[in-house]
Image 1 (cartoon, helix red, strand yellow):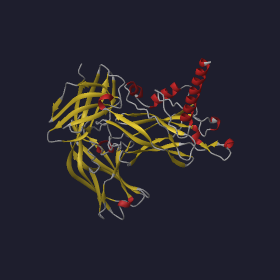
Image 2 (image 1 turned 180 degrees about the vertical axis):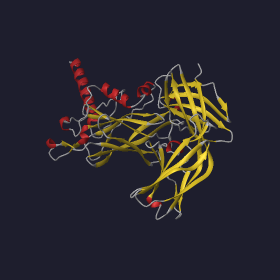
Image 3 (image 1 turned 90 degrees about the horizontal axis):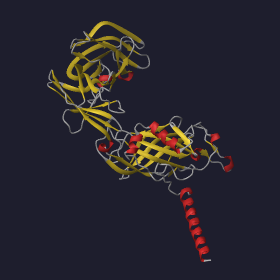
Image 4 (image 1 turned 90 degrees about the vertical axis):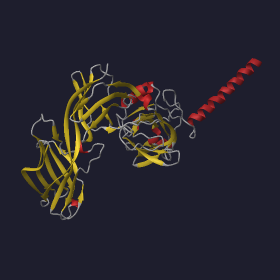
Length: 474
């Protein structure tokens, strides 16, 4: 008899525990926790997926969801292996909607923040008085923005967007899974204000909410605590050094190291020049065997380091044994003052020029080819840059956004002024046809009855050929 009472008592305890678990995972006020693989532990409210406003791909297993995340986020698998992602343990309600939203996993890579999220499909169901007649909203949902609240209580928007359409999302067991990304935040919770990879560590928790656009209306989820963790050293995969350097024509170029990280790969270089103003850009390529991959010409100064610059390169899966860095040319600027003045044509008219030289230097000539005053738009001056020989060691760079928007932000290297006193900085565009013309654009409201316009080259950008290849130390 005592043994029977004992088993009845155990059964009652288990029933109470089970009931408590159900209340915790199913109640509207409960927290939704995740398993060790970020899988939500609570069952989402079932919906009739035949009535979904968008046809999404459905996963058969949660492993497929994880594979989907890793396909969408480069090197996420390696970040997980190094335990660099965090797992928020609380879900958020969305006032006005039935269901919950969860940030399942966060990776702060130092260059980008990735949020692996999920939301109950019931959030997309329109509530009717008769629950049997509930139906899905008829418009595709969107995730438009995130809001982060600092420890001081200040709210800051994080620009992020997901169309919630395939291939951006996938469904599994009445939930929609997706990935959004934003610029990283620093240790004070503020969005990073510059391009590149963070050098500082962060290990902070900030309340975070998401804005959903559903059926034409915006809904903001309740904020939930999210841990943001980043350590530059932990993010590194490998560091490799160079031994050679270039010293000619008063220019010293010394590649220091190639660093492979989970978020980006880059090369740090020391660049010094005598009596020259380095423009902050160069041209080169990463060579592996017979393959050469060019990288962005803009390089950034490394903080608190004199004459050290960082060039970001395309990501490498592994370090090839025969990898080398080729630098073709580096770019400098010098003060000029060269200018040209043209009459402004009547609206809708264009004037063309033949051999109208406006700048000559470094065996390079810049020609004015035409000016056009569009009827409803802007004034456009078209320029063409020609050098005497492809083999010359120095030459002027084309007047184009490709070279004028380096870290030095030389947007005012060319300015304009009209005979009515209106002045400013033209915008640039590149025309691939007609021999690769560069166009300077001035909006109509800056003309206001002017008859002439003068463009001034405050700085001239020129290149110095280097043609040197640097190999990694064995």
